[in-house]
Image (cartoon, rainbow, N blue to C red; front, side):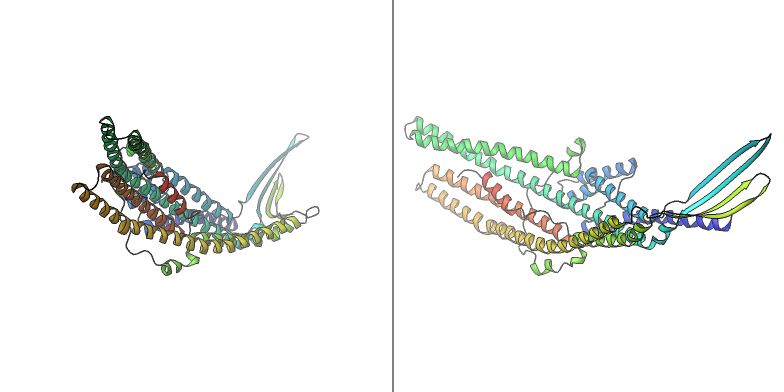
Length: 472
């Protein structure tokens, strides 16, 4: 084997090793992002042993007791198959990026020809080792495109982590809020049932009209409907959390949730601190810039290839019986007689302009999304504190005064029961505003990292809250 061949093989071996290093670096970057941002592990499970370890870790977190919001994020990033699928997809993108920067493999051609004439045998052996010169000449541009594509794959993995964490937080908030509200719907049901039973007895005693009894029974019927919906909501939100975390039946049986949501912070995030988020550090902006760099690099190597799309050089060695071997080289060039590459160059230029404008629009959208979600966050925070500090204490004070009047025989039992229902309804609405706040907080956190969700969600959530409230 000649020195030239050894050198060529060494180059190819080095390039193959670089591809492996790129994939390892991609996995390490994904893991580092998850640990720094969510204090969680996010690694692709490549075999059954890794999957079993993740399952054991998730089982241990579930066994510790009520699952916290942060632990829900950790379970999702560690165990959820949907997140594993996204990690595998980003790894495939990283592999495609690594393959782009590698020239195509050399082609070895072996030819053996036998000629028999007048009882004599002539043997011709031809050997040809060819490589594409055009791909080697455009390797710097291909390497630059590969680097940009690898960066985009890394950002995709980071974005998948943010999406999985946000979905886990939102599912956890909804499940806990539904369980917390159910307790108060049951109290509403108890009060309505007592009111309906008392109205029935008073009607039978002749102290209540048919209309008065019907009104109290209507309250009871409405409360029964709302209680059924609340119970179904608890089941639905819990199962949504189970799906988000990727828990099978055995792990889902170990899932327990805290009895109530955490209190909203007294001080909201400051708008100035959210606006100081560097746009260059956002995932969506960085992805758009990486796509623009990749397209610019593609434009660099697609332009020359549009003129000459094939340029191969080959080292040849031929042997023939009874003759000294022949050595030489062979050149192969595709002549642009029918296709001059005008369409290919125009398409590459248009693709670059599209990437350029997408990057510019991404920056505009990112700034707008931050403002939109921060406004929704502040509105949800103000509403949650308003219910907690103003409406709920005020309703309790009214209920206490009504009880004093009832004890002094200044009001009736039905007024007392009605006020009790109203107080409980205000508590349920306070729970729903706290739920909306934590959902807005999750959306804002994802938006600041560069994965904005569509819409603020506050209007829809408030409408749903008003529809689900008990009849007063």
